[in-house]
Image 1 (cartoon, rainbow, N blue to C red):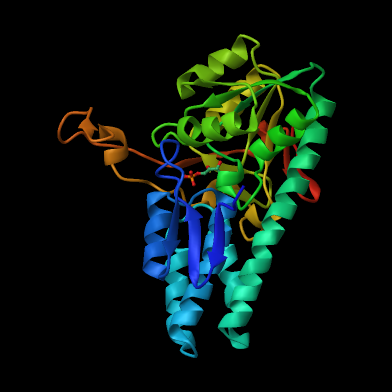
Image 2: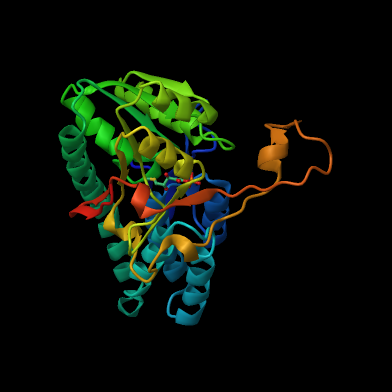
Length: 327
Ligand code: MRU
């Protein structure tokens, strides 16, 4: 399978996640503006993939502007600001920018090494998480609930929470995955269901609003999610709806496990309180596809993420093992 995001002959090549599941196609992005547009439209998305996008975007800028470092830095600034919540985006930008003195080739070499690293660290993080899940959940095979998309589409070539499912499934430990549809942009219905089907993992989609009662009815052994930013104390920003899942998991005594690469940890933030939550356009709620479903002029509150406090989280697992645990 090809990488979700890669570099090819002067272009950033992404799997177009706006076209899935109907069409599997790639887009070749040759300019920073095109890449920023793809990030904002969520054609490339998910925290680890955004880290790669940030780094490759700086490579695009470095080749475009040559020795004009001020112009490269200005493009890098715009890239880092394309979406505010996933810290990986600015982490990727900063890491590639640090090689600017070596020229565009050095920037690209760094970005490319980050692609390989992304797959390696996410495999390791999800392997740790799989071990933890097997340790914490007595029932076999396991019934997993997940939210949003945290598979290879959200990263370069593996995944985080869904990466954990890949490991567990390979060892015959998964009975099924309940995949939240993930309103309003349906990353669960469009992308997670597609990945689970490709991998041959039994799954059922459910409305986000059915997740708490599925947990209450004893249909779930563990909740596995990814993260867009983890504060130093272990608070986690992730796709909106995650906090509600953590509350339900705590209330019903099942593990709630967050899987993320270390690059998602923002050590500059003491707690999750200061994490900037992206608010997206009204159309995502007032319309389904091209059809308006809310009255004209309906006011909208559309946060893309929420913050789950560490005390509701069983463990945040990175490639180094358990980063934070509370219950
Ligand atoms: O808005 P998105 O689709 O970029 O949000 C993605 C998520 O919230 C994922 O759960 C998170 O980035 C982790 S991906 C491994």
